[in-house]
Image 1 (cartoon, one colour):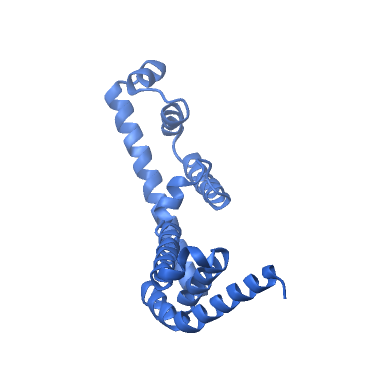
Image 2 (cartoon, rainbow, N blue to C red):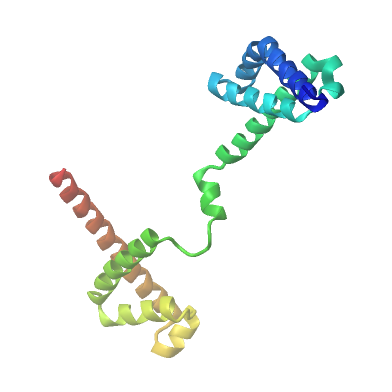
Length: 185
């Protein structure tokens, strides 16, 4: 048996003895830190993997201290990583997501616009015109007043009436849809 083989044998025997002596106490310790036996076992496995990479001469005199320190640091690293991953709530995810609406929102918006367009087409012509000028063209009451020849207060009153009608009809449609959904279920 050569010198290199003898050193390998010594290191593997040293690791085996460390495993026999410290695996159980480290597992109990890690399981308490992690709050779960299986996750604690994973941390202990990582700890012994690190031990395999160390030179026995560096830590032989303080093996227990080294093992518990490495185990503790590894457990805390895993817990920190998990807390970063799980602490993000759906509102934060929406805030971090791209500014473009998702496909479901696009479809819902199109359905809503279709319903509003249908309702608007049933309004008197003057109300339709003012709603378009306000919401499609972004004009002020003063500008709409100059375009239509109506007073600003009249523009405001007609717009208010139009929007109130649209809201009422939308609510009625939603209530009707909910009643129909209740009958289907």
